[in-house]
Amino acid sequence: MASLDKIDLDVTVVLGTARMPIHKLLRMGRGAIIELETPENDAVEILANGHPIARGEVVVNGTHIAVEVKELIRKPEVIAR
Image (cartoon, rainbow, N blue to C red; front, side):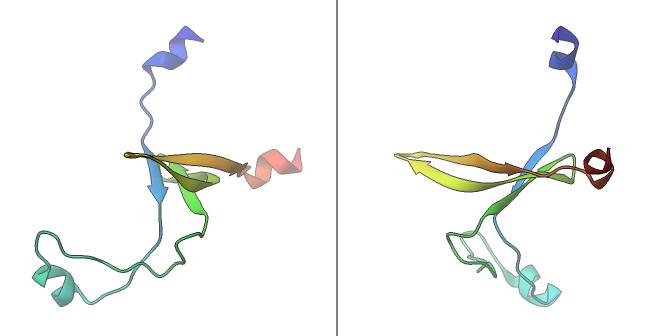
């Protein structure tokens, strides 16, 4: 298990998505707000190195924000076995 400590993993949590023209994005400045096309209580997607691995929910505890894993996503070839 100690060898796993040396593996780098990029973990991304996707809160939502938005579409906008590039000219609008380029005009945005510091403090701009991008409205997401998703309800606030919708599940978030958790990616590892760009691949979906789980779904979760945002948890706010005081000044800390975390993601609680609710469901693991299995690859189709793993499910087939």
